[in-house]
Length: 417
Ligand SMILES: [Zn+2]
Image 1: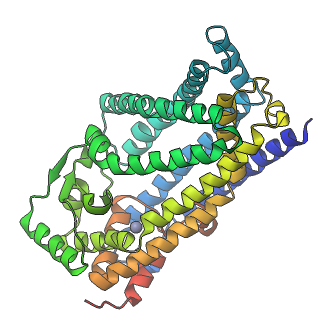
Image 2: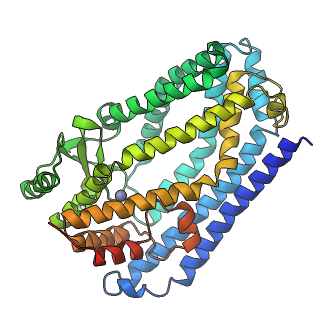
């Protein structure tokens, strides 16, 4: 056995077992705390809501474990099992190996097969888990309509991007990875800019906020924080799910504030204002840019690594692939890297949680901390988010700090305006 085959198998086993172990810990921890609302939430969250959150968390984590295990099997089938090689060989009968058409056909086929494997999990999550806990509002028709739109968008955006990358890899010599990186950065920025204007309206309807009282409050908040936006919109997220949220999209002058209709239904105006102040905090502290800078830095590192691996025969051979094309190298790399990159997950989560604390601190300065705390309690309850996550599971995965910690910090925060 080639040393890299062994390294891959060991990394896959370690990553998969670590994910399963964390999930089991999480389920056990939540079950052990199911019978009592944590003391800091007594009187604010009922035992019924607490137990619903426990069961919902268990159900979701349970599906996650099956998905993790299935993902490992599929990865093995694609690589050591000869799946990628067979797909490439299949297309060779029709198209010339190493040509652009062959490369694109290969990449699209792998993506479609991956999508087909994901489908049952998506359906189960939406129509069994989400439906059982009263969150799902999607019809099967809307689900497949969304899926069709996403697939079409994936083709329209993904195929030209993949073609461009394959072309750069073919003509730019040894430094191709640098050009691919620049292309990727430009594509990401353009996508982030156009997403709210061109893509989101394909899935949801956005209407200007009508409620004058709420509008006045929000405009007041924006003025207080020295913020300009290109409008306040309400999104009909209730078509798909009853989970609530609010966020900002766009850059520079094209910034928009989007409120989910489910959030407006559920929170009082001061609470919505506090939630928006938190979102403003993300903007004001440049979290979007910082996160992008980190992602771009990491992807530069990965592309450089791919630039090295693409010339190594053992990289293909050790993963049971005989066809050495650029498309094969790309697909192989993006399949195998996550197995080795799981260690980055806790770091990214930690980074994200730091940003959440900063945004909370900003909100406490520009709105009432007690309103944000109250809104968080309501959102936790409405979303059936557990108040008692396993600490290790939370440290690895959670982009947001545990509720108790956030609220404790808000309670000690000092407001300034
Ligand atoms: Zn946040």
